[in-house]
Image (cartoon, rainbow, N blue to C red; front, side, top):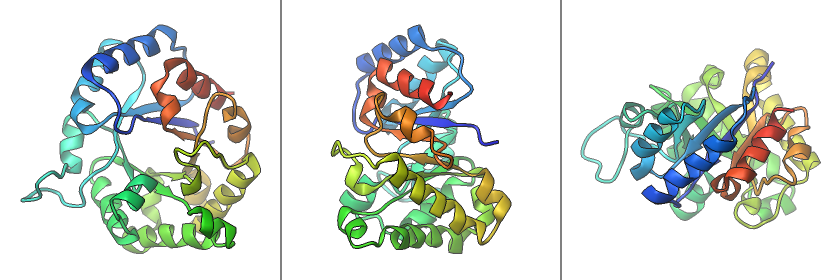
Length: 251
């Protein structure tokens, strides 16, 4: 049985003071849960948040929002997988829609980052379509193309210790959310696409939904059979909202 997961992506938010307050509020209200939980702060705060989580004895893992495709070298501004592991990360987001759109990351680069991450981290591979692609009936083909770039480079076995996040790009930061049925349809497609290569891995891989998840819609989304939790953006910055989402995933 797949363990549910809720990952908080803090994006480019926070300060040392805000991080202390956020973790403290989270610790005050945190309850035992069967759900795997992690947070992904900006690079510069990873070490601080790791210390705060450890001091509060919270069973919350640390993740990063991006990783370099290179292991080391003369790559100014880049951060490698081994560096992320060294500061306490277990997970890293790869191919988030905002990086694909704003930073021009293509499928080939995302696949290289996925491969680099796997050396010492668990990658969370983001896939999803634009609104025109959905309206044109191309959601499945876009998601398949994004998956295939990784499958061709790393093989299906790479997904035995990875996570996938379906985030329709039209529902990121827009307030729009896929209906539970829309999310389930694509999640089932992803699982079926992997099953053509390995049914066991397809059945065991966790597929999260990301796209304006909040306390009000989380329970319905997570009730879908192929939705194993969420990659949470803005709602992860509010302790009460994030904990409500975490509780919904554990039902």
